[in-house]
Image (cartoon, rainbow, N blue to C red; front, side, top):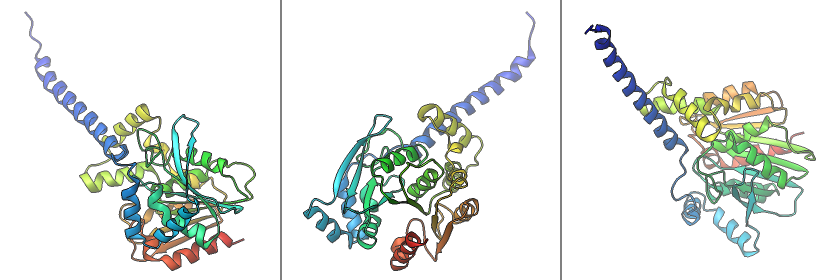
Length: 312
């Protein structure tokens, strides 16, 4: 029988490639679950209120006052995709409405400190949605703002007002920017956007965290995890770009970002600001880490946002 020495060499290569494929595939599944799986206790709003009151004690009397007159309402909508989504709403009969968007693995309750600012200081109605797979909204996986931009446009349509502002923090900020490049519902006379520490793109954010947390380069895991996300959930990491969306936006936008933000590096907001056509404003908050600009600079935050809303 003829011998085939090349087979002796080939088999170890095949085994190594097979093992590598298994490792990369397993790593891709792990990355998706690590990044996109909802928290198990996402519907535990009692603990979220307790945390909110500890961090922002001034919100408790505001919430209690609204509840005493049934002014803080749970609202549910069936989205075009069939999921039932939830929002907290305050309707003070104004012709101005703010859509306030929370961050990754947070919920509507967590961002009520900004809802209070809009209702109490600026006289806006407020809609605070729970994102897909967050809080009391249905959904199997977090979508990092990309498909969420369409859900938020649906909320915007349902609560359309003469004057509107969309204000998001972290993933909510990225969603705000992703919305800004889309066609908005007709009939809104004045619409503005406030991005507080949103990322340039999901690809950029995940690449940075992969390096910081695990010391891994983007190849091959980012590519395989992105492909897996596309197959499982219908979107890929490189599609989800706030940077491309703000380049298409012609509405006024205020960018806010902490100077010491390492989770969403401050450099990202400078790229976003450069990409956005006028009108636009940028405020880098001094000595501030991720998503803490309001907490660290409350009076200045309210003043700057108020001035942005009133600027003509």
